Image (cartoon, rainbow, N blue to C red; front, side, top):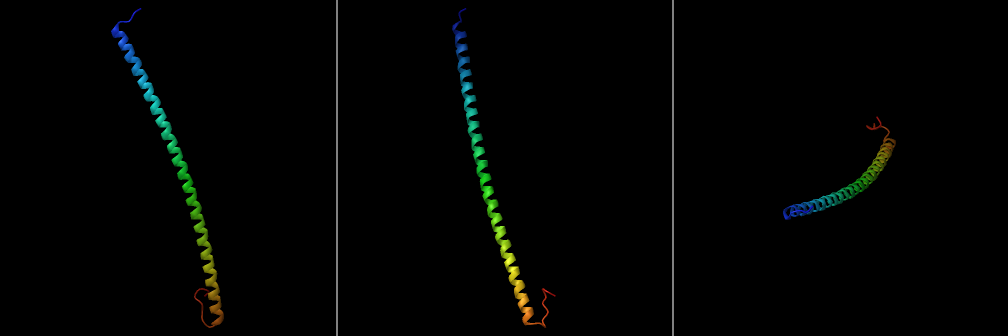
Length: 95
């Protein structure tokens, strides 16, 4: 069976378009894969930053807690010393 020139042209066009569509699909698939990798890397980076921020906040919170306890202790000592040196003055903190 022989194909006419027109039929061969149509078949060639169809093959070319098919090849072109396949190339486009592969390019899009590759692009999406690259985009996915970018998103994964970006999310890993954000997780790392979040972890560092949590550690930093935890450190600052503990530091502030220690400072508050130190100040409370100093205040209590000061109040205690004031009440011992002035036995007739009522201390508003201790009552």
